[in-house]
Length: 108
Length: 472
Image (cartoon, rainbow over all chains, first blue to last red; front, top):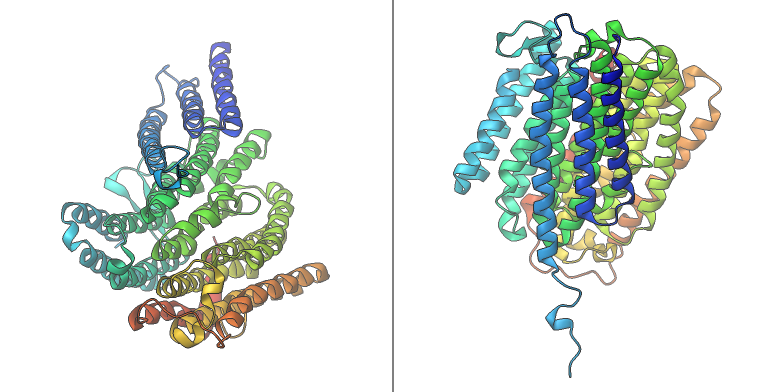
């Protein structure tokens, strides 16, 4: 790997922090919505790492276009996956709206 | 030919969304054409050697490259043929089983994802294929209605987490080496802590997605809840995708010390999967979950073969690995279709429902027993072929008595869970009455892959030769 400036190292550290927060939320989080959000935070950490790596000491200071293309693709995938997860979650809530169903309620 | 195999299912899926009325016919049509094209490609590749194309005429390094060697072609052929078969089964039963209209375009997309996965040799492209496969698989599971939503959501979350782990590994490798193509990456590969960490992260993600023990927890619920044709596709094909990438990584990228260091992990997990998966299959009260646990157990054989291949570098293990994949795909498709047909007709999810099934639905029961024979590894079936290659490889290494013992134990376990069903089915004293007259065509369709897995033994010579050469 080419040399990284301290500034880039800071960004990489932040990306790792985001990943760790997301990982913690995904493993611990009891609610499904939280776990979906945690996955998004993990994704944000990874995309940030990729953004930083695109600037890793290339000759003319330009960013690596391949990585940026990868991030765009990754973002599209992440957005559609999140939408799908949320749609499933909504259907789950619809399928059983409350603790009790009308036919299960005790009679008078 | 490769482009046709990718474009046709995609265009087909889009047309199916436009005209849902003719979707079943379109699925059958695209699956038939793709099967023929896959056969043609396999013949071409076996004559002229592997083929590579660069998409859209970009120069090498920038373009997405697709490579077809004989292993990829064999897997594509397997995918398209099973897709055709399952589509036929779904066509025969979709009115009765109230299969959603979503099944048709989704199964075409599943075929697209798998085909492109078998052809890709580029880490990021493989990630996109994995995601496509995961999303489509979850959508297919959720087709069976409200009761399947929870396992589907759980499957989706774990699958997304797995792909994110994989993506992080890809980002690390690209940051270090600046290439994504696997063969180009292998040339620059260095054994250091960064590459090891990236490989381990990707392995974690892929093991989660392939439901390899101990990360298999989501599989029985998801495969058990899905409609029968979907379970057949998922168990036979989808879990093999991440396994394929895992093999690519460790066989083509990893250096020899890294490979030898990881081998005990794979063999250990494989062995645990075989024994614990077998025990779970023996204990579960539900018919489809039994078959799903058997998938967990059988994936253990593939892991075991991969671990031994990394450890000893003996081509027989590569042959064993891919023979397991082929034989398991055919046998498991037959099992799920047969069990699905029986439970739909006899009306019940528990194994007790199968009581006396040999009398009420002899053909489907025969299909299950024949496919079960291959799962156990009875000669002369595909499963036997794979196990024989594994044992032969172990024998040539010498002094591996412990492994032989473990494999015998695993075989006994698989025999136990297959015979548990067979014994119930032959309990003819008081058979469960079918809800309606059993139908012949779906039962025959379940029998076809079971017969195919036994026919594999007839082609053992060319298969073994091909897989020993091209086992990645």
